[in-house]
Length: 297
Figure 1 (cartoon, helix red, strand yellow):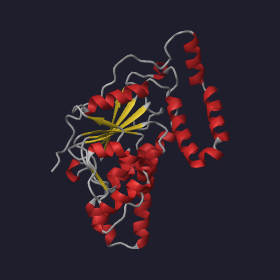
Figure 2: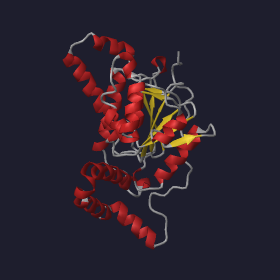
Figure 3: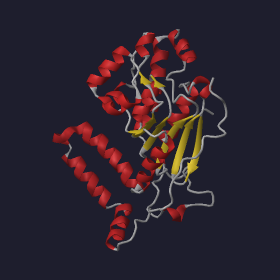
Figure 4: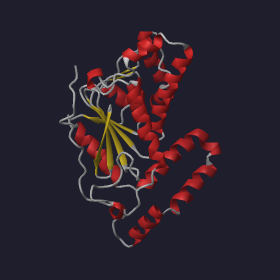
């Protein structure tokens, strides 16, 4: 399998583990990522008092689990986060007809959209370069944490291609003007420039990528799991409708949130001057990548 899943408390850590091809997107990787993130929508939200549903092996948030994780961390093995499309498969598609190319592009686009639409916050841990579709995967995540080894480039035009299915995600992140520049020039974007553009949200300046990821995840774990999912829906809906047409949606969503057990439990705890039911003072740590099979060539 190209994707590994590890449970760390209420967090699902998803690792792209194909360093021999610099974690490029082949059909297997695309299918596994799409299935993983698509199924999140069909799972139950972790209840406010999550300890009551915690089993001997931990929370049931892994593959085929009943519950959504509180947070998803997306990372990769090796020195490259993701090199984009698999060159071998791309060569085959270059010799295929239009319909085969259309199907492959729709499949890849569906994978990016599954990540973007995941009802759980997705935190990207970017430890190295991301090119082409790899940048699209980064842009699909909610919060992007990168270190100073990260590099980004839309290299498609160098191969006579275009950054097709990733374009809406990237434009949403960095804006039309910046996307126009970097799509057309294919120049490499360094980590600090990526931070200024909005492609990266947190930069691990002190060579402490895992510590920076852990800080972000810790902040997310302090918030209600259901509220986090509703916030993601609110952001998508408010942007899609615009200010003039979003009044009903925004009112409906706050009304819906107030009536959920999570908000009721949090308000009760607030007035009783007690911690919210999901509060956990354990410091969350990212599982080590040590022992991951394969070495980058």
